[in-house]
Length: 200
Image 1 (tube, rainbow, N blue to C red):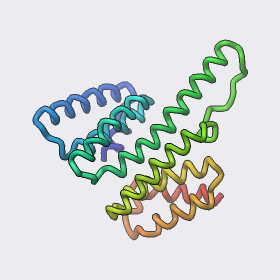
Image 2: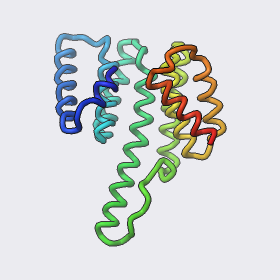
Image 3: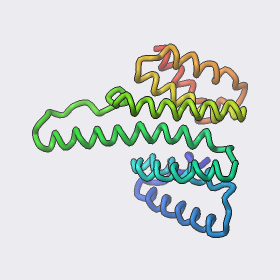
Image 4: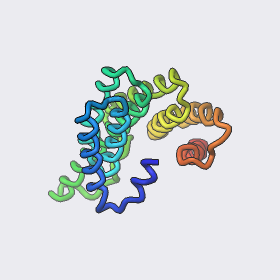
């Protein structure tokens, strides 16, 4: 629901949306409420990622993960780790893009391809992959198939960039095959599209 509402906001209102989310979280925390805080922080981290503020998103996740451990409420932990993996990759790609732009502006290099996951250092890819595996492990333990599907899609996209299409397809097909309804949802539609890409 959040993703749908967020995508409907015009670009010039997204910053305002983030500010309001922050205000809401502050008010929520001021009354001593902790139970749903990891969920709200996950939404905020996702919002930061969508506006390209990855470092802020990672800082929010660094705040959220200890709350999960302190409260013992792990319902949203899988999504927190998945988002961390996504933001780690996005953050590093932004750094590479910035470096390329600096080289171009100084005339040191002609315009090159936009950096992708393939251009990332192995350590960054390993860190993201570990986050995705952790998210999958938590989701499986909780039997949270929708969260497992999201984490598997994130890992599959990374593997696709690494040339591991066969492994990615097998893992995603196994999770996708579990579902018997809900094929009109955004996640299952994206999974179906990704499965097709991985075959081709």
